[in-house]
Length: 418
Image 1: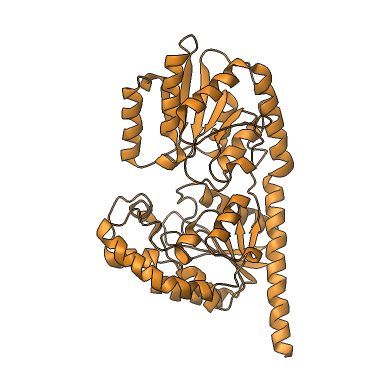
Image 2: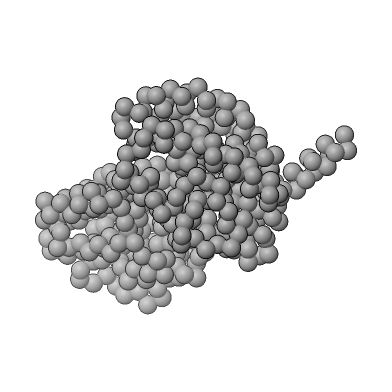
């Protein structure tokens, strides 16, 4: 197949797991003989040989947009959240040049719905791959995702969205959507999307990189806790810090340390450091920043308990699957689609989001019960290999892409005969 892949960020320009997933899928599809063109912004470090730049976005300045290091002008906010004419025009031109069998529209948060509308207007067969709520914010729910806009901009942007979103939704109504969890499917249905256009395909991970530690030792002194994820409030690292403080006070006979892997805004990292200092646990925490998948896998294999503390509606987490695959016992919150990956008491423990006392209780339970740790780690690793390997994930996507492409050709043939 000849495929066009539209996305706002792409490695080495990343803000989270979505960009890494896209890169891995594209690489695997190319290895299987498909021709995949990447349509994204312009960046000096992006050396993809099939890269076109229809998106009006300088990737070198991505932190301004995605970390909010600079407040946008009103015109910029309009282009980011409503419609970017230059991106629309350039995307149409690129798709007409490529003439793909199928266009995959991946994440386009903060670049407006222009790429999706362009794909429809270019008469390309389109499928949306929605791994979070950006499509809902762009087509159905005005006033969402405007966190970085100055407050005075939000009412006019919301008002315009309220006027144009019904038109955009009607234009894209026939586009199928692939979501990564049943939770996300239900979220899209509640937002007004048609059920028969939504297909659930759970994510998959490289089980060879995230292999289990067959020589995992018993928990020693101290018990090594690990958090991995973007450092922002929704991921809940502050909850892990509060749980660590609770353990220090409630179980002084035991010692726990916490490793935090991930990057975020400087202000939030400062907040975490101040919180840890106030709670008397700063000396028990090690911050390691962003690391490669290989380094993260090694961290999972050398720690004792993984804490997945998301407060926001996590669609379906690769980091959670990766930890489970490595055989480290996991504790996850019940937020979003995470419970679809975990059977509580069998492949992990589930606690309420934003509850450091419950999290501390689950940590203590695992630390004191070696039989439970062994069962959770063994069953979790086996479950990931059976259900959520990357190869199985791409097999499913490839079959769907082929079906959508074949459907497009048969529809076009029917029109020509008529």
